[in-house]
Every structure is written in C-alpha cells, then in structure tokens.
Image: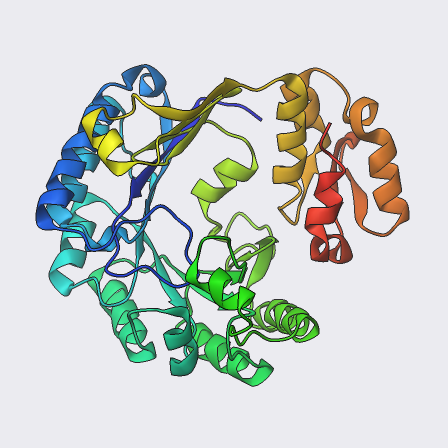
Length: 394
C-alpha cells in the first residue's frame, strides 16, 4: 500500500577481501583516495535527486555493501548530512549500517552513534573456524564476539546478525553451536540465509570441479528446517523466508517491533531510492538501477542506468505477489485492491485456489471479513517458495 514514506539505500562497494561465495558489486582492495572520491560522487547524486525526496517522510536509511564499515566514519557523516539537508531525518528513522567483524573500532562506533546510526547488521555467518575459512571470511568467531560487544556497549543495541546454512563442512551439530553462540548474545534480529552458489564466484568454480565440500541436498534441507525450529524455540519469530525478529510474537502495542523496516519496504513495494554503484530504486512503478561500473559511476554519479523502465500493471501485480508472499503474513487482499483498483481474485483466483488445495497457501479472513483478509504461504509453501511464486508471473 502506497503512502508518503520513502526509504534510502546507500551502496558502499568496498571490501577488505571478497568472500568466496559473494557475487555482490564490491571492489578490493580499497584505497583512502577511493573512499573520498566515492563519497563525493554519492553526494552529487543525492543532491541531484531532490525531486524524489522533497515533501516525503523518511522511513529508513540502509547503508549496505560491500563492507560499509571499512569507510571512514567522516564519509558516512557527510553522506547522511547531505540527505538531512534535503529530507528530515527523524528520531524514529531506522538507520542501519552493515558491518563485518574486524573493520570497526570503538572510536568509529562512537562516531556512528553521534551521526544517528541506530541499527547495525553484523555478518557472523558461522561461529565455526573451519567454516569461516572455507567461506573466505576475514574474521574469526572471537572477532565477531568482540565486534558485537563493541556495538552493544558503544550505544547501538538494535543489532542484527547474519548466519548462513548449507555451507561447506556444516553439520547439524555445528549449526546448533553457531546458533547457540549467536542467541546467547540476544540480538534483536537474525537473518539466516541458505547458501546459493552463484555463477562467476570462486565457489561456482569449485562446484564445477567437484571440490566444494557442501552438505548433501537432503542434509542441507534438514539444516534449513533445524534453523527455523531452533530460532522459534528461542523466541525469534520468522517474518520472512530468511528473517527472524524478537518482539513480534504477540502483536501487542507494548511489543517493540524489531523487524527490519527497510527490507519490509522492498517486500511491500513501497517507494525507495538507491544511491551508489549498482543501487536500485522503485518510485511508484518506475524502476531504475545505476551502472555497475565504479569508474563510470564516479565520473557521472547517477547518470548511467543499466535499467530504467516503467512497470506495466501486470509486472507490478506480479511483484506485489512474489515479493509480498516472502513474508509469513503474506499479502493483504485490500492492499491489492487499493494498489491496482481490481480484485485479487479476478487476477489470481485460479492459481490461489490451486495453491490452497495443494496445501501450499491459505487464506485468513480479517476481522472485517474477506475484504480485509490475507493470503499467505503455508510452511510447506515457504519450503518451495520459488516454485510457488513462479505461478504469479503474468
């Protein structure tokens, strides 16, 4: 459902070292000069985008990468200052920065707090040393624990932790050890991603040569389900295929909602604008994406697009469904009607009935009847989400 809110994504494409599974746009190694040239480019692009931000309410800012925490904090400060000159950053604006252990100091965290960052996402991935080395991570389990403590005691306690499943050498026992160590810290949010081996990565080459020691397909599925069960038993409610949060169990107004507000913006097709190399934007049905070439972006910030299109109603409806169905509470029937001025049953009635019959989806009537109900995937449907969602492409 559309409103006057907008979110901002800032892409920082620099890393200390690229992980063996990563296919994101990141550059290594990064020099001090590159940090400042890139910051200047970001400010130019943001300054030229006032038309998208004026008279809007800023819901969230997400600084992702790459590894944003390798950037000097003064660069992050300049970028946020440029944004605040155009659109008001309120006390309740969610401002997240991604961080990898070993790239932050107490001084940098103090700077983050001073400039308004109030949420951090730390990439742990595993607490097992052999698994971390196999992933090509630059940190150890001890490094992660130290980084977590630095953020928590430094004044940012809204912490999300990333873990990965189905990775080289992982077993059920090693997964439980990782989850135990992470949960002991009581982070507000946990993202648990299943490894996908992407073409063009070192992992893909190893897979082709048969030298990537992954769990079997059956074992990876058991690990995936075990992750869900263990997190649920420890108070983490799954609200999206790979994301879990505290504080969303009862729905009481007294509960604090620790779901990632920024990512919900994507799944609910709200307006967002991305700044930086490879960053994507959606304003209404206008979708556009910046060039993936760093030199091209720095030379003309925001000018070169790899994608720039207005989505048709059919494309927008399909996005509404396959993004919205990623959430455990699915899509709201009245939101579809409000967004497209047509009933969801007129477009997707047959496929919805098919998925309900097959036990892959269910309809939950709202308090005001079917018009305010929700359509969502069952747990079985979530397990085969890619198959189910493909049926909603018009």
